[in-house]
Picture (spheres, rainbow over the protein chains, first blue to last red):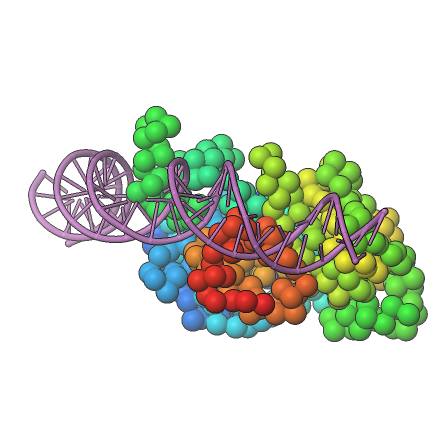
Length: 193
Length: 193
DNA sequence: TAAAAACATTGAACAAGTTCAATAAATACA
DNA sequence: TGTATTTATTGAACTTGTTCAATGTTTTTA
């Protein structure tokens, strides 16, 4: 039970057996059917999730109707709307399952409990946030400097297994280009799938 | 001494007087002349800094020679190359003073000491990293969806005092557009300065 | 398994932003 | 204060990517 979560945690911090049981006990399993939502714009995100199985997209719908995917979350990745979760503000994001999925959810209250009662947990999330921050900085710089061709090639090279599970529409929405243009890029690069 | 730093810290956590003295004692003051560097590409960033006075730019030079500014740091902002600092890897970034500046620096070792000996420090940096992460996500989404006009207007509205201290070259390098195009945008918008 | 829905491809016209080069204006500095 | 350097402006040609519309393909679902 919750073996992936325990393994993930152990990569970054050392917990006693009782602390581990205590902390992991705060997570509730939830099955999410393909296309259904964990969060919709306007709601307050009061959970953080660890994906055991499946695939989610975290995205924003711009005023002009265009969907921008902020990130994907697959097995052993975490997801939340950090802004809404942290500030208890209305979310600008949607979180939707793209496959039938299993996710472990911890509520904001239970996370607070963990911060206050298991000292190492503060460290765990500090390290996790650092890592995602580094990755996001890199993505930011890439997006501002690379052409769409390079962004696409980098993406399928960096996430080969994930890109197999996504439509080109979704990849385009992540890269921030139109799917028509992605199609033309793929043609130019002789990518057939 | 170090009043701004102490005030900053107190916004997020509560330290006893001795803890505060202990922690702030780990910071060394450094004067940095305009145009000189705190960090250059290829070096390992073993410090984190809190700006007391002045202005820095943290930027990357792309293979094609274009300078991309990742962020600016003014009074009461922190700066480091998080990736190089965290992983002790060679930095891809330059950190340069754009004005004569005063900065408080803490070494990686001393920060480790603080993490291990002052429990609340873990929380402080967890919260700080969360905040910058939220801001970076927002900037990411903006950059992918907004036109250069909007990005520029948003920037000068969000950072009115900072933008007064920057050249248009620097603002363009932050927004990820050419400075010629920024000039045309300013003309169109009737911005005279 | 047939119909509906979602996804992918292609072309043509267009818009946004870049590059290069020339010039002007402002700033730094000896 | 005058000269060198950096910064800003402008225009023309060009590149990258978008939008719209039409068509074909694949996947989902009743």
